[in-house]
Length: 599
Image 1 (cartoon, one colour):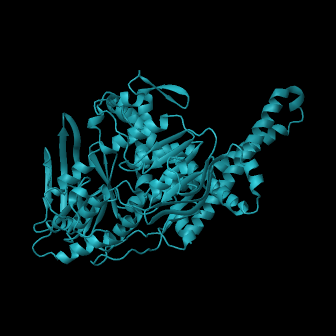
Image 2 (image 1 turned 60 degrees about the horizontal axis):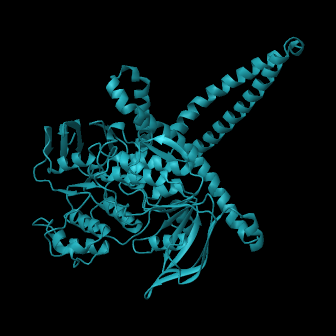
Image 3 (image 1 turned 30 degrees about the horizontal axis):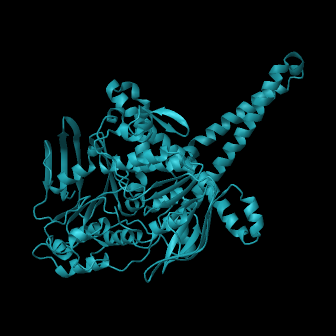
């Protein structure tokens, strides 16, 4: 077996008296692509810095083959000390690297190289750092949240570039679609140790849930301290994964209803529509337009938003997504056209900048605005510690100062504050930035339960597919088009294929112009596979139960001697027959799906 290019073994590291890594490690071979996943605060970024040689562990071994090149992309690139972006990128080149490739990558990422680093936005700094990491075509790329602050065209370009690269890859990302399309193996960092799955991220979540479910069945063997600290989070992850399947089915139904409404809209007179929509209309924009100087941001847009709609807004950076939100919510006036808002709107906004909080406040004070130890959620008072758990904060963090929270923890805190406020219209501008996968599951579940309306700006394709009922997409030159369904539905209606997962490394090549490739193959999820195995047994039990109940009815004296028993038996028989019909329908639907996938 070929020796790995880089291996970390039995890595231990403690910060401030609390062990962060307790025997973690991984190995990466030539051309191999690993997804490194785990909760925010689990130590993923620290482990990647150890792999890059930037942090020394307390104990353990880092072995890198002699002569290999490694490039590391941090979450927050530092361009200080360089006069231009080009100088920053070229400073990362080796003596035999091609400087022309650095310029080509910068141009492909929308930069000239002449920009002053101190004037770059977060997204531009991320692009410059990506060019620096990619330009030398290293043996190993260590990428920490490379898609943060990138727009969709840049994310898809980066996917294609990495698919064409022969560099080995260790990748941390909250973007499910990005991980699915690039990874060949998955390393899970959990409670200080690592486990490896020799499959890409597409197989990770069901594998993780199986492990967590096995741990739950053996919980009586665990130390009470471990049980108290981890039980709530492990149960939450597993339960949410199961409930999310129901959310997706409900979302499919919503989308079908949405498509039907779109087809019928042209046949309904406006006066009838207004009567039918009384109390349901949230926003009605009619032929609105907005320009800044010579640039058209919105041109002749008409849109009707009804209660319960969840609309995703997508487009490249600079397209005007935030401006469009302002127009639709009435905080910005259009140059022409009208925007009519529904009655009694209560709007809560979570913007990209994340409203500043007093860094001296504790987490509990931030949630209660410094008043007491309860927070009002949905009209009901809850203890702040109970509400914190909903957002995966353990009780001991209640007195943690906000200033020491990680980016992901701050993102969760802002979500907790926003979602606690009374609202019937949520306006979320890039809510998924810095959130880990479990928190994205939580946010998806909450939006699935939310009875109001959602306007969502996001570059997370998987999150859009899971949450929204329609997608408002930028078409260029200030024009926006609404498509029924999520991001993948939009691509289908445009006639564009989705990005495909990479299975093997491809030859090195120069930066290419954006293009699309084929979509990932549908697979049965863990719950679906489990249901296929267990439903036949459940059907047999229900059939036996029905036969036993029918045998009771065969007694002609049952009603005369036991009227209450007769009624109970009749009710039980009706319930069992309904359960049997539902189980048979579910098994048939899953069997048809299995045959379609395997066929």
